[in-house]
Length: 313
Image (cartoon, rainbow, N blue to C red; front, side, top):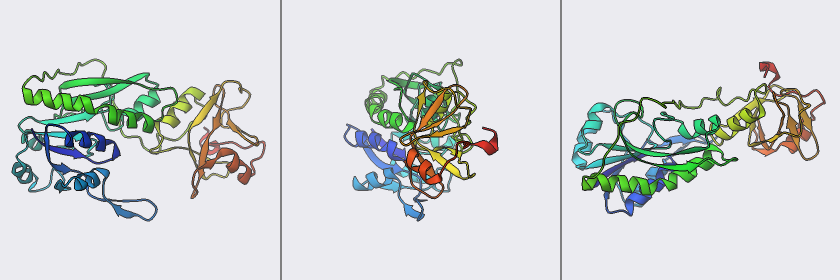
């Protein structure tokens, strides 16, 4: 089949790579426009654009709702379109313009975790198993009929970044099998059940703020779910924002009140509603991540140091 590939970030690249090596023909790539990133606000192409141009593919950055997009789509004469973390809502007219529809690779076992942040929400919720679904896009939020699924165990220390990286490569056989079945006429998409629906809205910075009155297990899941983006955080004793890398639950330490800090030469412990957690790397405002013990020495924390105090957390 002639395919249009729609995707933007790094996690979409393995799927594009698999399609380029398949029996199908990728005729163009649709991706988000170049964006300004980093402290220097450098205009940077998306990872999908970089790989597509390396492969000699035409790259489309026009938004699907823009004037003339349907004409561009018609000129491509594609049989189907594949979507992997593209980042735009497709209007019905665009969905209907492709004969075999738009096949979406979604990083959850639908109908669980419909939305923009399925992997982050799965880690934050403590799910033990997640996976990938291929389904036909419809106007509703991740509501279309499912072609197939694959499962993946959520490991005890997985961050959302770790898990998403595994899913992005493990999903490629499922994607290829889905497209082969569509072309052969053997695909049998199944409508999603009404039961078991959960939503995965985008993680905001407020969502990523650690509440020290939560149990240690919940804080650990929150931090791992928000790593690498948007990044968990709290406020330091001086009131400045403090980014948090991975934390480690410490069931052997239960004498610290929520948010209270005990800084040693090699470790920094913080109290929660249950037992303490040990901080890993931290990032004070305007600085790169550093070992928590190094930060604590530089900050000269006293015995009464508390994180998140101004929020009562």
